[in-house]
Image (tube, rainbow, N blue to C red; front, side, top):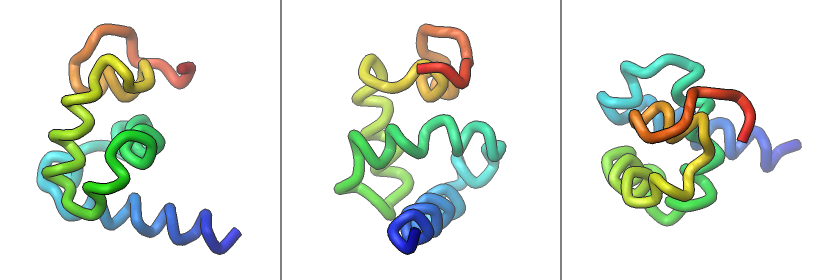
Length: 79
């Protein structure tokens, strides 16, 4: 439970510090949070580096997150 709270706080901090993500919707942030931790954990809390990392892993991202970056795949809650 505590670990989940820490992860959530980190994600909120991550997405609130970068203008790109700060302007994003809750859905956009939620769609990429898991991928950010999975592929770009070492870049957290530098939101600019996380975004660059996610773009570098575009083909590996969940369908929902790829959709946020304009990648192939329809925005969806399914992976």
